[in-house]
Length: 238
Image: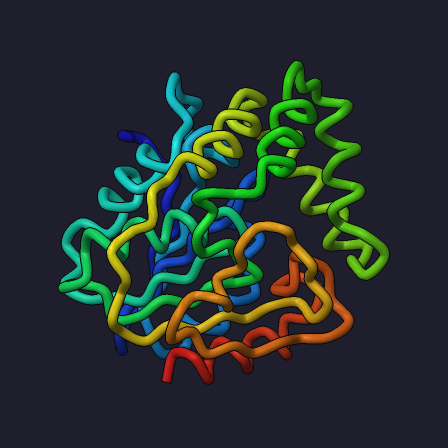
């Protein structure tokens, strides 16, 4: 998709591409962008229908993979870091572009959302039908939970308010239809919030993934504890 908002800067090392999750924007990575750009190039971008990127007529995992391919055009080799739903995009992308991908870092992310339990599919269908801005804000307040810091809560709810509303239900439905991708043979890491009990398949369960957990944080762990998260990310990117 043309016109995606991309924040690109820094130099040295293997570049890192940061992919935010559903309802967020690249500002969730602001602490990581500053940290990583001390020693390497970092690209972060707003997904279609999110942040400062334009709205779209199509919202699907396939479309997000195509957008990612546009963002990384010209990079001979790079790391991919993805949060939440972006994990499905990373897995699908890695199945196509193994030759240019240095490694994957899943951040409290889904890895394979295919073949979910029937009750998960039905919950998404019933919950997401006729979504309104008010219901969406309430859904994210619930997801933030008691561990989210006040500044995390503010940033997440602000970004959700900017999201193109149809993107929420369309992308949640699309991720359940993605067939398992060809496994990526390179380095794979998962940085997860301790206690996450998501009923879909987390990336940490994929074969060959090394996991690091951070305690006392919400699903938006990069915002709740930047020092601990950055240390875990540095360890993965070595």
